[in-house]
Image (cartoon, rainbow over all chains, first blue to last red; front, side):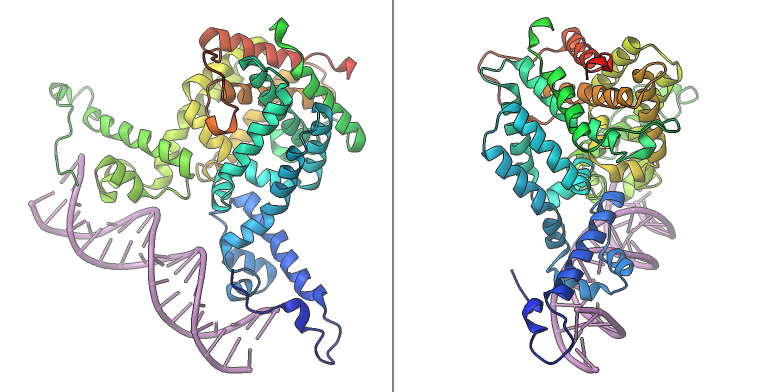
Amino acid sequence: MRRNSHPESEAVSGNEHLRPAHDAMGTKERIQQVALELFVVHGYEKTSLREIADRLGITKAALYYHYASKQELLKSVTQPLIDEFEVLVATDPDRETLLRAYVDLLNRHQAVFQLVANDHASLAAAELVERSAKLRRETVRQLAGPDPRPIDYILAGAAFSAVAQAFSVARSVEPDATPALPEGAAYPDGQELTEVLLAIALRVLNPAENL
Amino acid sequence: MRRNSHPESEAVSGNEHLRPAHDAMGTKERIQQVALELFVVHGYEKTSLREIADRLGITKAALYYHYASKQELLKSVTQPLIDEFEVLVATDPDRETLLRAYVDLLNRHQAVFQLVANDHASLAAAELVERSAKLRRETVRQLAGPDPRPIDYILAGAAFSAVAQAFSVARSVEPDATPALPEGAAYPDGQELTEVLLAIALRVLNPAENL
DNA sequence: GTCTATATACAGATAGAC
DNA sequence: GTCTATCTGTATATAGAC
């Protein structure tokens, strides 16, 4: 990968005002933040670097100082979630631990989840199609339990998806797609929401005998 | 490149006054079919008209004889599913009827579901963001039952999503994302699959008291 | 109904000044 | 670290011949 220079170290050189790692890091993070927002709304392919730059009040060329390409910018946005998820499944946790950790991931990487779940094109551009498929395969396998029958895989997939969707409703990720709540009513959140999501998953994961 | 100027379908040439567009229908449908396949795999924005034309053995310009724009082609592909879905929810069916009809929709419009579920950009380009949000809102409302509390909406969303995901696993819509089955094992299909999906939904939709 | 050729637009990306 | 200016590729869409 090509690097123009190291913005973090250069600012400390002279007698300028303090513009340490702070400034460069701040810009990179603001770029990621704006890019993520636009990717989620318009999709990766439909979002142009011009649009990102305009929103930030800079030019396209300035973007290229921070990221070598549009693809690199996308990867930098999706990487933390994928890496964390892979570490999680690699520990081969039990059902409940896995589900709780998954809900924690949903909470901390909400927007990135929304992006990769709704925009396959961004998965492809980030070269994550295979890795994310493997993640889903592994998660389903762990949820399906030992000696799974076909129906157990179906239930595991359903439970996995139900948790994410229930989270999406409770956190109003797509407000237009959910009925409005009456005055005074509110969705559970925090630890209470985690318990609800866990309970939903366990409902689905009940043994298949009575199907 | 193929230069055949008369594809087929002279069978009804005596009936132009009754079915004037019949000649073009075959070609139009082949275009839709190829377009849908490519949209699903690469996403709407990443699929070029050149790619569609090449796959059909014609040129881009020929495409424009059949569809006024790329957007019109997309709309013609997504319209049948959306229209049918809207008719369905407009009948305000009971839970079980709705779920069975939904599974029927999944079966008959599998690829279109896959497209709009995984590619928000195509929803936007087809100007279906609002309509599909309303469809989901209405479906969730009907699944949540009368006098729903917040938790009932959460359960309804979870159940809705669980059915689609369970269907996707059982029909191996994304084979790489599902663990391989052992020799001789197979997923349920047809009426049996419908019953399984219904049972999963009803598991989730159980009253919320024991959450 | 399909072709060749082209108009037009805008995307991602680079060069070099400041 | 950001700018202006530009290169290059490719996309949608159109014009007009056959």
